[in-house]
Image 1 (cartoon, rainbow, N blue to C red):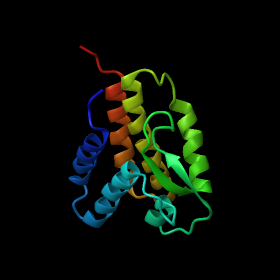
Image 2 (cartoon, rainbow, N blue to C red):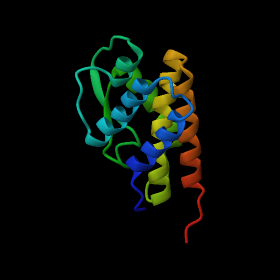
Image 3 (cartoon, rainbow, N blue to C red):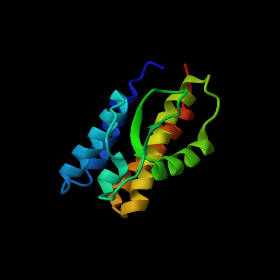
Image 4 (cartoon, rainbow, N blue to C red):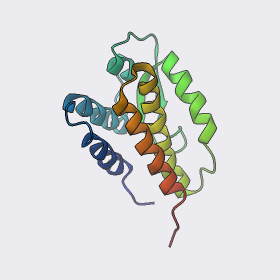
Amino acid sequence: MTEDRVNIAVVSIRKVQDRFPDIPEKFRQILCLVIEAYKQTVSNRCVLCRLTGKTSDALEQHHIAGRNNWPDSLSVCLSCHNRLTENQKKWQNDLSNDRIRLSSYFDGLRDLFELLWELTGESHYRALAKRFTDQAWSIRNSCTS
């Protein structure tokens, strides 16, 4: 698939941002998170704990779509990484299918934002998780020409 996963993610984030115009700084941080993942920026603090104001322990790199799909990864603490990886095991399959590979990126973003919602209770994270769930489903179930 030739679709640019990062551009699709940014458009999705912007659509959710329109519903939450009173918190522009939070959406700047969210956009930075997607860019950090794309660039595989190694951080000295868990990016999720940073967004939630929590302290973090030892860091690992989490591949958003799974190591075999895309290189995009974020520095996360061991606790966050374990939770994200457990969720990832539920949806990874058929890595040879381009639609599944692309949809896995959005499944991974959904997992990130669901965890952020769980940790903070902030509704914009839940809205982002829902948006990425819909995006993954749409890609996974689209007809090919």
